[in-house]
Image (cartoon, rainbow, N blue to C red; front, side):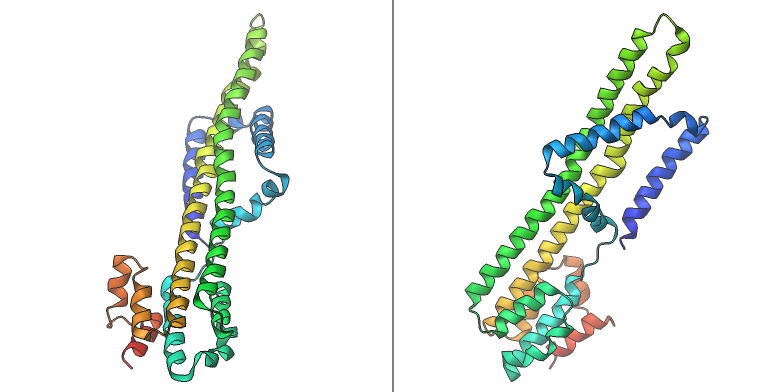
Length: 271
């Protein structure tokens, strides 16, 4: 679970609620007509912009911002380095018995194609196509939340106009002004709150997750192609390390660190 997403929402939400309670009753900020306008209007506009199937998938997409689980590049590197080393010693078919140990389906697919004897160009074409389409699917998910984040404030302003019209129509009776004024103000509040504390942050988190996953898959592809071409495991290791950030590269080259994934790499390299 990505604890930072939950912490961010809790911090932002708790501060807003605290500010509301410090200024009076929280009931003042609960208005059902305003909620209906903002939620209903935002979802309706989103349905106009996207197919129903894509909108219904929003819940599943949102889970990636909270329950994202992905292997780190440093956990993939030892597998590919070991694959390269074993391939040069025992041949590429010797790795087939270990495919079930690989949890990353993309990596397992690439290794399986290499074991099956596919040419490097064919492997690159298949895996590159998969990377491209995964990127498009991720982009669509982020775009839906970005669209919702754009619609929510606009729908809130629409609700404000509705409330102002209702208020102006009842100016002759001051006792009836309160409810329309609440609608006018709270719809903008709800729209702004949803956009800036939920929809847009989730969209940005999904974009970051997509970039991280694409980088990981590009690294896997480079590693598989390098093994396929018969590169020495040390060369494969250095190619893959190049995908890491400078800070991670320093850590992974520090043999004094006692992390299992680092130890695996340096044990192979020193053989």
